[in-house]
Length: 249
Image (cartoon, rainbow, N blue to C red; front, side, top):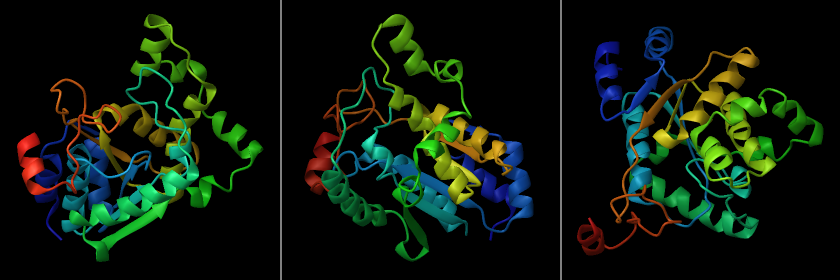
């Protein structure tokens, strides 16, 4: 395994923010292998180039000798991540989630080493939660804190658009994933910052060392304005023909 300075140089490449880098250094001093997590919800079929920004960083951690986890949010996909949304996401049926999950498992290995990647589904633990468990989880955060996040604040104060209660639960459920996996590091796009910070808070609440957060820039879509997204239909799929990928780029 490379020395800490060399690792940090590679880890910093292309990142938007590292929270907290000093904690990451300490973890690298103590542990030979860090548990590094990336989670994606299979709300839509196929991955696009925007996803590869984060997955490539995960591959760098893998090449540095760390334990990487690719989490498929088959449970959280039923809610839908509200990050960067100006309206409540429509629900996705379980059958579609299952089909999309299978595709994800094939596509990630265009980048990650299959033999060195742990693929997990958050339905394994979130699916076992009962009503009282959900209430206990919700007790760790306040409505005021939830409304601090930019997209909720914008919808509530400026756009006067409704926010459904279940959207407040999403960051907490994603945070629970970090607790269950005892993540040392979690990667995500800059729009995921709030969700990742909730993960740190929840880990502290249960006595775990809080995960280091590494955010990466969002890739603009074909419209040159909004982030690349299947919802916006401005994406380049990673399984498209080479000529099509080149042409769209």
